[in-house]
Amino acid sequence: MILEYEDIVVGSDLRAVLFAFNNNLPIFFSQPRRPFRFDFLAPNIDLGCVKLTRNNLLELTNITEVKVVGLRAELLWERLLFLLNLDGKVPLANLCASMRFDREHLTCSNEYSKIGTLNFSNCFYFGDDNISGLVRQKELANPTYTCYDWIAFNSGGKHEIDYIWVGDDFVKEIWFYSSDRMCGNSPVKDACVVSALTQDQLAEFDYSETMARFKMISEMEKRGMKGRQNGYSTNGNPKHYKFRTTPISRTKHRDPVAIISTDDRVSLPKVSEGCMLADLEAACSAYDRFLKYL
Image 1 (cartoon, rainbow, N blue to C red):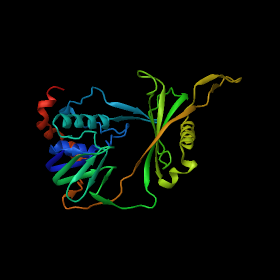
Image 2: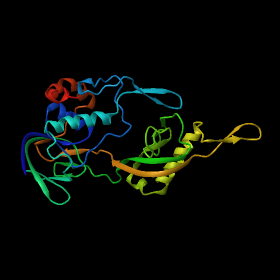
Image 3: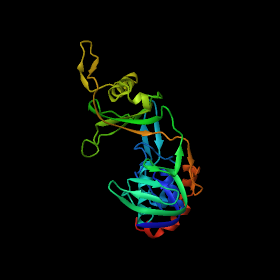
């Protein structure tokens, strides 16, 4: 299969999807870069133009305050990709596993064989994990990663706190969410611990999933959080069980590094997410034939 386009977008994070949507361009990627589950848009951003509305703003409870946030970025990402799909602007969908640029063509392949060749005049590159030839990136001796430790609470998971900001590289923030292990909107919460770690640190036990669990519990206890109540002491003070947790999984994503285009046809857009969100309503007119049914 040979596909020919004047302009294409390569990438799948929210910036890439916004750029493709606003400019009505086809988008290609090898692996979807879904926004982090707890990335929220500003509460003043109106997304009624893509039929994403909410009656009440979401409130996140911290130890000392209640923070008002907007819609989850993931919802906007899904809606824009859906509309691009309906308009035929995601030709390979999620069928592509890798891409290779040979200075003439962009070859797309799955796990077994080549599935298509792209010819283009201009490529707007936003980043992709499994592509070669389009850009050259600076090699770092010890690259950094954003690390996500997903942790289940076996005891002590019922509380009102939604997030804790710590600020350290190891356990920078802690997000609590209604457990996915149980059906419905469970009062039991699990946690996601976000850290910024180097490649060397990822191999050390001091920065392992086990230590992330221990530090998370320590930070919770520092802030006065307690496990399930366990009766009263002889002097009448309430006693509490210790928090009991189990690791679910650890995922990590390499942080962006400086990149350089290898071809005059490949550009690296610097437009900000905020600017593209401001242009979103005007771009929706090209998708009215789909939006009227949502």
